[in-house]
Image (cartoon, rainbow, N blue to C red; front, side, top):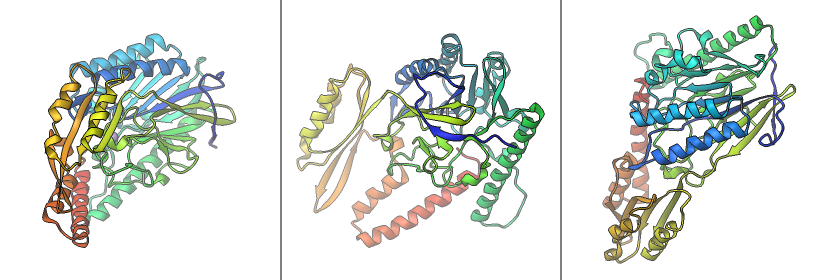
Length: 435
Ligand SMILES: [Mn+2]
């Protein structure tokens, strides 16, 4: 028998507590850059405010489902930021008994796991890699009296070695992906069985929850073409929601930066990232998920986060671009990053340096700008200050198509071929266990 709690959207923050409270968040990407703009200051602000949220929501559990760090080798100051945060929560939000940090595809699993035993003394459970014994991945979430209120199956990003496959030779890429999907399903089944056994051993009737850092079919990856920074590789291996037992009361996911549930009222949710990492996330409201384990239901509330970073994208005449730059000078509460495209006739107007100079000594920055010159009905873009990360295969391809002046029909044909080529490349990367 599994105690499956019904999800109930309700107001929890500021209301009196009726059960164990869990904050579900993910994809912090500490140490990450926005184009070439360092996010360290913004992220420090975020961590401070996050510690405040853990305190003000009276959360008993803080769960970070992967991509805590942005790179495999976070600098000393980025690691310090992380440890300062843990210390802040431990000293200021004392009711938070369990801090759970799971590895994502961006995380340096070994760096996360290095202090694992030490951190356990502080009830900080880090799991960069999946432990060999699945039983070690089951966390008993206890209340202030030490009573187990729920079981959490902790699942960091799974590497190829975590998903043993049967050796098959001479199969297609599709077949091999299907085998990986099956291996993933088997993995979650195996974990679920272990959780049922644990529950039985404890002699308790408590809700069971799962977690994971992976893309699930049906989720919205991006609002537009651009924010393909993360998930580009990996979204090929789309697992199906059925890998999670339907008896799970909640499935806390990470990896996709857009917060969402898989279908209306679904118990399978992505918390989303706390701040945008690309212009594709422009306009997304960022939040964390707050859960409350009650006797008869699982209360859930999406708690909106402040906007730590503002984004402005302008494509148009020079005076519009100038006005946008002037307007950000008024903003002092948060940095604003601008992406600007000048599409006017007179290219001599486009003096980007003058605009950049306006932002010196502010926290705002123009992270991308370009001059688009219109010629015979075709737009050709002349790039200024384009960063490497912007040079996606798609971007270069678009430029080429424009330059060649292919018909729409021909262009879409070429586009189809490019998509296939990219997909094949991604599949290959994914099979090799790339991020
Ligand atoms: Mn990820």
